[in-house]
Image (cartoon, rainbow, N blue to C red):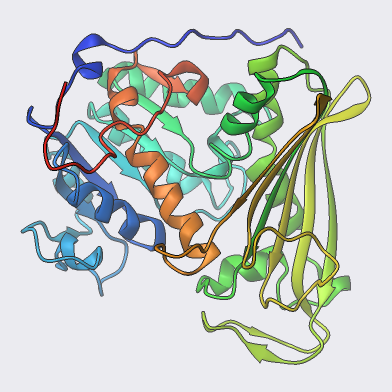
Length: 391
């Protein structure tokens, strides 16, 4: 496979110089779950953006004010399940956060194909889209990469719109930040990233079950292992695109830790004695016969599970290790004072922030599918809270 092109950063001056007193960007929040609620908070609290619509997926949330979903006061925008009404709403960008089945969206009968099909008319309606769906941060690792890309680009051409996928992991701590760190060293032989999180408060029992939590080791579902490759297999290709190396293969290695007793997590998920309560896996991009980019995850349902496994900080976080001259290592603990108090919830909030902070760059980009390599640097525009805006 030929090396993929590297795209220069370009930011339209009108967007680059936009001040918060200018007309705010009109945003539709598509999805009002964990990450969507955090995104709404950031949007509502920032005068640079105006929430003009909220897509919910359950009857229980229909009619609920967006501000209430975000834990704030009402803003006069009610959540709806009416897709046609949202498509007819004038908006600059959609933050697209539907539930994902963690399967290959390029396969026609895949459970994840639904979000892909639903995305196309949004793009064709002329709305730019930003989404944290893991599997789409790149496309080379998918079963039908060219078909996946062609469908998105066709919809973007129809609507003169742009679509980009990234969050915190992947989208920042697995790729954008390691690439920035690699810019300060030389002779890099391997880049490793670690996500170490406690999933105790996660309420999506179906997703946890698909990954293997609560199963006996011998019953570990093969679709769970495949979902790891689908979700994080794009990271090595993204790093390779930026650095000019060729990825020959993607491999997955997995280890599990069993629960010594039966317990129910704070999120309401029951883990039986002797079943999987911790999963440690790595997704590696192979180049020249050796792993050059390795994405590691350590996920526990309870803090005491897998005591010999890596940790970051006191309640979890992220680590980046670069084998280089000189070596470069960074630890990024989550769950710090002033946040949510949970490494998992902090990660969800930061995923939402990454999407919100990309709005200006995505709106300014040319039509089509983009990775963060194609966009202007995402530097936290409009994030500084100040009594007055200067310069």
